[in-house]
Image 1: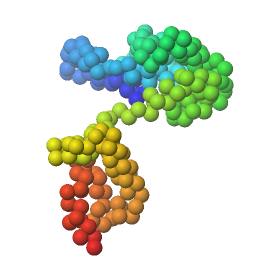
Image 2: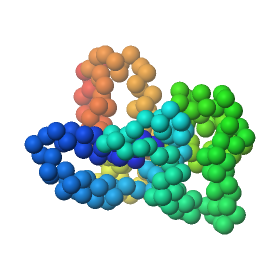
Image 3: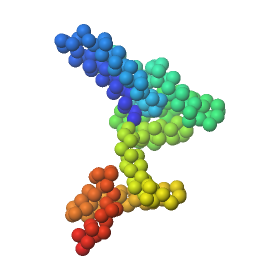
Length: 233
């Protein structure tokens, strides 16, 4: 999640570098407009918040290297759009004005490398350690911001895991099985999903007739479970 904003920005610069000596160089301006408009449509507050909480993008060595397209790199706190989206995220996350002020205060402490964030160990680990592990290690002075950072930075950038759960739910609670209440259906989905994850550590998952049975998210093998049981016998 924390790399999406920076990678899209670099992608536009890389396309510019490729088109400089290309026969389509005259079309770059129009192409850039299309790319930027699409990126502005896709960009969400979560991308900017993840970008601003990634310690790697504040490293001096990273900032001294020009971005693709010959554009100087800027730290997240020097990007007006990123700062605006981060403040918008704090407005959504916080329950009152005091919490908003505290998060802004902790963010300033993190970006200005004060306290624990200014140690030599912190600067070394900021470029070598996973951002999630880094916040777990050095976020003790800004507990509220560290909690938000860990939640944001661990967010998957794909909805496939959620879609698999929805697929399982649609099988358990459908037209034929519509008398289940919501609480009971949620429990059945929870049990099925955890059994599926636990089965990956068994030998039968790695070999045999049920090898990698959950690769297809649309198939749960419920309907032909009796036939499979007989085959195994």
